[in-house]
Length: 131
Image 1 (cartoon, rainbow, N blue to C red):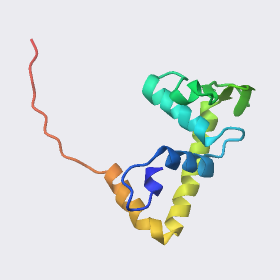
Image 2 (image 1 turned 135 degrees about the vertical axis):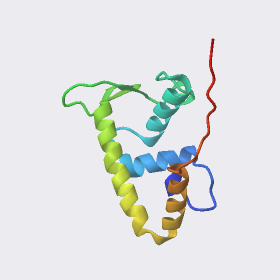
Image 3 (image 1 turned 180 degrees about the vertical axis):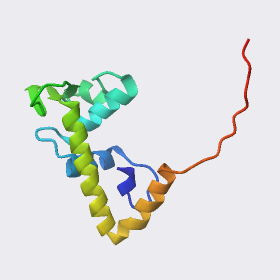
Image 4 (image 1 turned 135 degrees about the horizontal axis):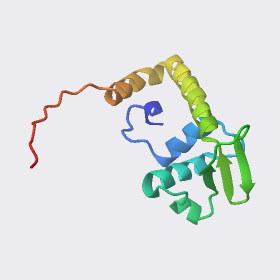
């Protein structure tokens, strides 16, 4: 989401993430807020629970099963095949890059941000002996 922000913004927000997911990931029956909640849960607690699930957003679980894409297990739970999620991410990223490269108002911001993301730094490390 941060690669698509306009120049005056320096940090992606919850809204940016949700908008990007809904525009580019397009997982049937799964909302952007649900995927944002799953992202927060994994990143901050390494569980399926986040502050959003505690407020009623459906929890997302991951399971590998032939033919499984995204399935509503019940009113409070969604199960997604991680391979399907990665495929949707690959397709979404491709469409995002294509759209961004066509939009001259976002081109320079995109290239500046991606250069920051993939920069090379020289690091010197001293050798230490541990006894």
